[in-house]
Image (tube, rainbow, N blue to C red):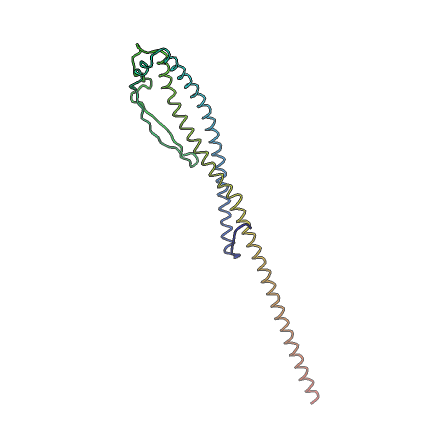
Length: 233
């Protein structure tokens, strides 16, 4: 028994057995939670990898289009074209619960009905590559938002998995073994006390029996003495 002090009483034994049952149930529930979280986490990680690859590919397209537009237009004209954004976005955050983990859910609404209504300039004085870049950036924005959402979800689930793993290990390797050791210790002590009590009772019974035998023997001797005295008289 490691670093645990208990009173070897039946009441303490009953309490520890209840504590052990609770710990074992908690250990099973936490293991189930950890396993399900791991499954959800791995699914989320696969989704992150797939979506990140799409986002990086589309951002590369945006970068290439802006590079070509920068080569075809003067820096002043490019800056003037993008100086006043036409579209604006309202971002809201809610959350959903995944195995007791509150993960974020991002939603956004554009100022105008059409998501494609994003060009803040006239098309006559700009390059077609700039149109391609702005359009691609508008489309990739939603995927970037979704990527941020699931990456944050993966981070929160990883933190919860680590917490759950530590709790499972604490129960499995510390609390449950220590409680079982304490139960064995108390059981052993109570058995020793029972044996000692039985031995004392047997010893007392033997002493009482021996005393009864001695009294009977003394009474018999006295009776024999009286009988012999009567015969001699």
